[in-house]
Image 1 (cartoon, one colour):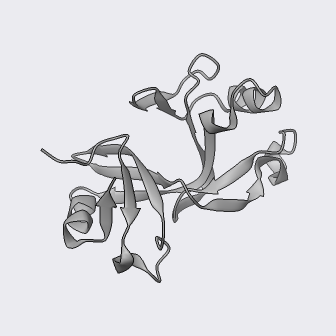
Image 2 (cartoon, rainbow, N blue to C red; image 1 turned 180 degrees about the horizontal axis):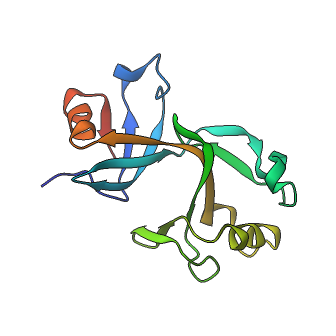
Length: 143
């Protein structure tokens, strides 16, 4: 049985020094026969949500650098399905995506704690078997 599942954290090893993934911790949110998807959880993007033109009506909210893939879109992870509809449960009490207007409203009204919502620019993706191979070769340590 694989130790890789949705909801598992992986941490880069010294094998990835000098790459985008140097000193990163990634939360795996999807892991199946099609591949894996995750978000870097320890790298701030350096901008706030309200600094993006289309979200200038939002409150100050730190964006995270989720990964090198699809850096043109925002991705939301949250623990508040009671406030944000349409998310897909990826692990115990953790949801991916949802109604972005409700995400903004939740942020603007401080209805959720900062640790209950994360917004990422980009994500990390692996083809089928690729992440397992990287773990086996020692690039990632499963936490």
